[in-house]
Each structure stands twice: as structure tokens, then as C-alpha cells.
Length: 356
Image 1: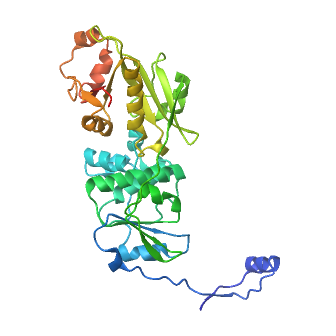
Image 2 (image 1 turned 180 degrees about the vertical axis):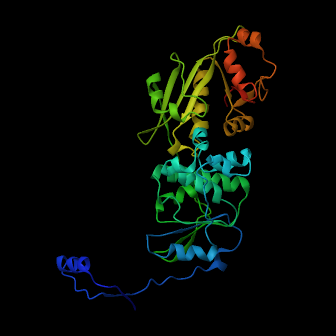
Image 3 (image 1 turned 90 degrees about the horizontal axis):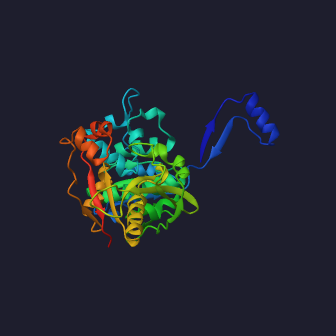
């Protein structure tokens, strides 16, 4: 039994009177008994471990058996993306936690939303041997699920090892897919190597361009939209999560051709793989209607997905810059010369959707 002593004052006296609690400045309590983790039973061949249990159940104490959580500092005068080794490292790590908003990458840390700050902190901490305390404890549960999926993908892709998370939320277990779980309530280790995350079933509904207002600030390049675009909204569990649109592709040689115009997934749902599936589905809808469907994107992760997907075929303009364009070429193609000048140094991924 342990004892604590404080100096009584008017506030403790009033609370004692109101709640009829006898108090002389001393309290007694039994300290929490924590059963140490049997590290030998866990072994060395694993990627993700999870310590889960309610607040005050000893998660942080157990987490220290695996190391200390890395503390990160943010310079108020620098963009979030400037805190990484280089542009590629920033893109890889921020995308790995489902933080895909390019405008937000350019902002200082202190102006980000709570969910964006959580993802940015995690992006700098995630590495082999890392320990992450209070994982997803301070964010919306949609962010928690999407971030868990994104982190799992990144760890598997990079082959990272021995990363331990602790959380008071049991709802992320199926989304994070840990190799083992230690529950501080039952004080037992459970192997979850065969755990599979739940299916994500998204409904795609036709809509007008007015729905774009909900998504325009989250597009990685521009908030503009063609007023004549055909549009769809993606809905998951009754909540709007994404938007996609297409416009005709003017061409003297390609008949009945359309191109992807704007595709956006709201930040809280990024990292779940909804974006590429939405884009594929819209493409499938177009070719089922007898159309040819094209897309050009600067987003590297989406572009690399299409490079590897049998559903997309690279065009002759794939990953070719516009350095050779001049004003006459822009006019011939019906493209704004100002737009060409602004983007001529950017290499884009250009593909046609061909389906299964």
C-alpha cells in the first residue's frame, strides 16, 4: 500500500464537505501491478507489435521495455516537408501515414489540424525499432483507421522491423494488422499474424459539380473545375469520402474519348486505398459505355500505381516533360500557354484505362 500527502486548503475542504468524504490530506492506494512482457515468447521475426488497454493500465510502462519514443521538434518558420532529408523522403514518409495534402505539406506544423499534426509526427518517427505511444488516441476514428492501414502498408513495403505501438483504442486492431497484441486487461499475448482488415465498401453516386465545393480545397494542384464535367461522389458508411469527375478529351484522331478531370479523397480517409479504386471504377464505367478513357497526373504514388497495374496502359506522353512545347504547339493542342509555361518542367504520368 502506498500513501500520498498534500496540504489541505479551502478547496479540498469544500469538496470533502459536498461529497461527504473524510479527508485530512492523506490518501492511500494500491499501486498498479504490471506483469512484465515475456519478450522471449515474442521472438525477433515480426514487424508490428501492439500494446492495448484502457488508460492507466500500464501501457506506457510496458512500452519502455522496447525503447523510448523519439521526440520530434518542428521549426515554426519551415514547411512541414522541409523537416525531412529531401523531397523524395518527405513525399514517401508523409504519404506513408496517409498525409497526402500537398498544400498542407507547405505549411508550418503549428497551423495544421489535429489529425494532420498526428500524421506528421508519425511520419518522422516511423522506422525499425520505433516505439509509438498513444497511437491514434487524439484523432478522429476515421483518421485512426486510415492511418493504421497506411502505416501497415509502408512498414511492409519498406521491410521495417520491430515497431511497437500502444493505444487505448481496440478499434484499430483489424486495420493495423499487428503480428502480436498484448492486452493489459487480460495480461496475455495474442498472435494475430492471420488477421485481415475489414472490407471497405464504397458507393459511387452521380452528382453535380456543386458537390466539388466540399473537396476543392483538398486537391493537390487546383481547386478549379470544368462546369461541364460529369461528376460522382464516393460514400462510405453514409459519409462522403471522395469525388471524381471526367471531361471530354478534344482530339482530331481519338473519337469518343474522355479524360479524368478531378479526383480527390478527403484527408481523413486518405491511406485506405479508396483513391485508386475510385479512379479505376470511373475508368471502368467509361469503357463499359464504349468510350476511351485517359488520365494524366503528377501525383507520384497514383502514377506508380498505374505503372504497375494491368488495368492502365502508358501513352506515348507518359513521363515526358513539356520542355519542347512552344506557344504554337500549345495553341494546336488547345492548351493554355500560361498553363504550359507553369508546368513545363513537371513530368507527368499519362495512361489510358484498358480495364481487366
